[in-house]
Amino acid sequence: MEESFGVTERLNAEQTKQFLRALELIEADDFRTGSDWEEAHSICKKHEGITPLDRVHALCHRVEGDDANAAYWYRRARVEQATGSLKEEWRQIRHLAD
Image 1 (cartoon, one colour):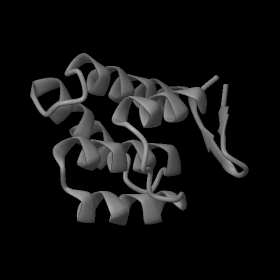
Image 2: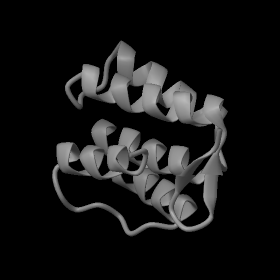
Image 3: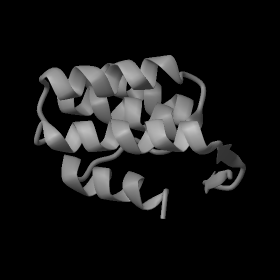
């Protein structure tokens, strides 16, 4: 089963699982870097080029405080750079899977 993310992006079941897992890990570290953040970042790197995971990758770098790297990933994900809180952005990204 494929899930729809945005206008044209579709994820297969495994990609959807990884997308949700990365988001869970970012939340588990309470939006700070740590071992769960490292795992989330690793998932995103493994799925580079998949737009929803590139967006999570941008969030990873916002959490890290690396705004320049985050900006790169927002461009890759074809979305505006987030300006709200990390939790707000997390909720917006998570909502993509609903």
